[in-house]
Length: 452
Image (cartoon, rainbow, N blue to C red):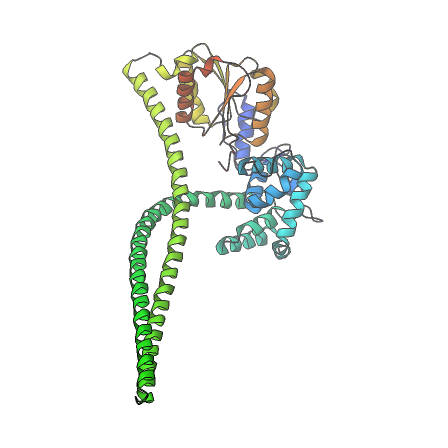
């Protein structure tokens, strides 16, 4: 089956023939060439559901990340890879699972088996759909109820799931991820309020503990007094046998009732104290969770601020001295930069920046229109290879790393395809002197293009 991404491809500016422009226009209007666009018959089978390995490679990341939890992957993935179950990060486990799904071997079969076993009920429910419209209706119902993972797996492997249906489901799932950012901001506001409530609860618990301590001390003193009084009354009863036994019994009974009332009051305060302590512990755990989210948001904000500062400095330098090179991009003079992936608009701006700094800027779209085999011809002559992790697929990124390692070419991943990320990287390389080194891969993190 042809590999077709689950979204519309961005148009890449290039000097092509008139026929290539016509082919692109045809793809925009839905009349793509038969060799590039699979038919509905190729995308579905009337005899069986699609396997995980049958799905387009662009869908594996969303299926694995949505339908299987990290704990399940941590138990399954190390059986087919050399990852350590205890020390591997969640990101490494996710990457390995996506690679197993793409390879289509025994690991993909195990993932398929786990997904089918977990979502067998949803698969049976979606089997009632006999056409793409009915399948989409079931998917919309699942979106309303919030039961996303079972419905997503059942839809992606359904025999009637044509490419338009899978694209619609992929788009809905993608937009749901944007809601997480808005929820994080609300969580930060709730964190501040919870911290204030937590401090108030701590003060209240301390006051209650002090009061309980006073009550306990008072109760012990009352017990000692009552015991002494009972002893005194018993001694008097022994010395004066003529004293009425009924009066002594009534007094003892009254003392016992008073003691029981104090015990009951102490039990009530003890129960309230334990309830308050438990609530304080719950609030502390919740506050720690929100604090971790806040730390992650602050770390991301620091990265974005660094990129914005680098871009602002580059723009100020260009504006202050007409025709002069930005100080952050001086290290690109005479360098050949190969940029893989990205977006047409930002790529044009990056070309202008690099060329104004005296460098050579080569763009490869990562295999959308340019062949991936051109990596081997373009990379050996490059001084620096840069690729944005949010605008390049898994296959192209893995192939790019292998080619760079083979030819000892320095490569660097970017957080986004923005001009700010590129300028921030060049500024950092210029400060640390890494741009003049050529060797194996610099220390980089295995950053997932869709999951961070």
